[in-house]
Image (cartoon, rainbow, N blue to C red; front, top):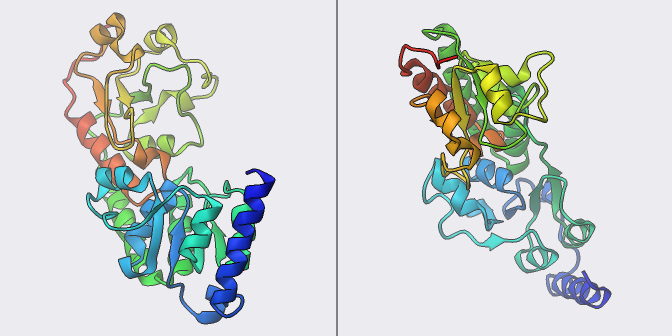
Length: 289
């Protein structure tokens, strides 16, 4: 941000505070947060599930597309932001959910308006999801709702664990690019919960290079494809349409909602359940060698 604009924004923030009668007390001092702002699509989707609409002052401009994939209409009517300093000044939240990537100016203005900033980490496992759901629930003053969401997720995972798959399939999340999610990723956790084996997580498997040749040599039983946009499963990548891939994996390409693989959400367990069902429905024959 240009120095002149920075001074204007800081001046606006100071004026807003002055009009309100001095620095606002932070959420912790007033009790439960009442004006919550999210600056990241993943925290958007957690907040929309945990807090009542009356507490949500703003979510990001990406929230409607993300919500459309999981709970259509949940973000309707809520003010949208671009994670900018001006948004903090205009909305005057008392709690900001962030991923740690916002600008220093946003954090400066958050302090000026009395907003507490909570950094919500990315999730690479279901335990991470439990942790961040509790974190957001506690910050929003809704721990009971957060606990209920975790219980729903754990019930889905427990059901998968109690009913082994018909066959342990070897799969890979490959959409035609050169990199695939390997060991320690949320996608790997979802594949494992579904009862399958992520071949990109095997020792010795290079996770940074996975072209058509490597894919055909690895001979996975099925290919998983993420969507081209939030919540929009698609099989239209150039690599995914490669003739050799089409022939080898006809009927064995499974699309998934990549928002549940990108963001650590309770619905990530639903993605594991959906993957299990899709794998169980695969034709009996394996891809030709």
